[in-house]
Length: 56
Image (tube, rainbow, N blue to C red; front, side, top):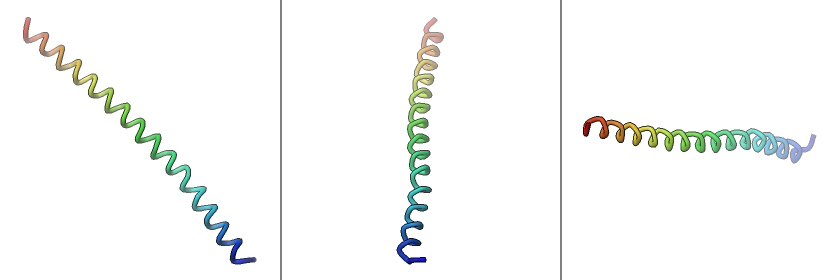
């Protein structure tokens, strides 16, 4: 077979593997950002509730 065919096939396989990896990493980063924001909200609520208890 032609060398160009193998070059094309190698590039296609590389891109075929790279695309899902990039998609998974992007989704993971987005999910971690949402979880971090949620954790900060919970922490802020906990601090407010602790402040309210100490004032009483």
